[in-house]
Image 1: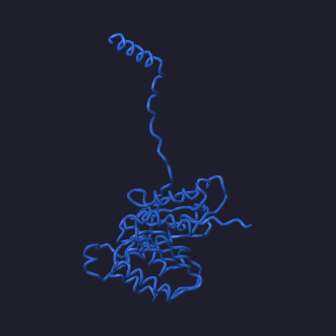
Image 2: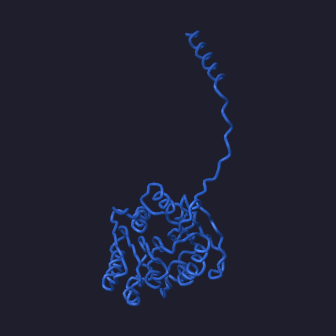
Image 3: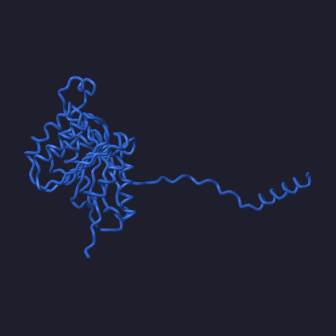
Length: 280
C-alpha cells in the first residue's frame, strides 16, 4: 500500500515537472461596442452624452445607412447596449438591414420625456417635469445635425423609446410628425397627466399631413386603465386614418412593463429594417 502511494506521488511529480509553465495572466482588453460623444448643447444648457453604434462593415464601405434614434440611450442603466445588440444581431444573421443606432442619454427623465402638467400632485412630486418641447428641439436642432454631419446617414430616420420615452415618442408623432419617418413606442406611459395625450390625440391627428410615416405601438399586461388609454389612442388613429400613415398596435399580454422591451424592439427592427426580398 505504501509503495503504491509513493509511486503515485512520484508519477504526479513527474507530470508536474513536465507540464509547461502557466503563462502569466494578461491585462484585460476593453470590449468596445460603440463610440460615445460629449455634445455641448445650447438648447439644454449642458453637455450631453450621445452614443453611436455603427454596423460592422461601416468603415470599409461607402454606403449610407438609416439611423435609429434611441431615447434613454445611455450606457449605464439605460438602453444603448441591448438595443444596439439587436442591430448587431440583425447584421450577423442577415435578418435586418444595417442601421446606425444613436443613443441619446437621459439625465432628468420627467423633465425631458414627460409632457407639462397642471396636476399639483405631479408638480410637487416632480418639480422639474414638463420640458419635452425643449428636449425635442435639442434632438432636432443639435443631435440630428451632429449625426448627419459626421456619419453617412441615408436620410431614413426612426425614434424608439419605452415607458416615459415611449410617451415622448407618441407625443412627437402627434405634434411633430415630420421629425422622423418611423416611431416605435413600447408600453408608453399614457397614464401621465391623467391620460391627456391619448384623449387629445384626435385633435393632433386632424392637423397631420399625409406624408409617409410609420407608427409601431405595443403594450404589455398593465391593467385596465392603461389598456383603456391605449384604446383611446388607437381609436383616434382609426378615426383619423391617413393613407400615408401606417400604424399597428400589438398587445403583449404575456409581458409586463418590466419585461416587454427587448422582444418588442426586436420585432420593430425586423419590421422597419427588413431585408428586401430579391426579385425572381
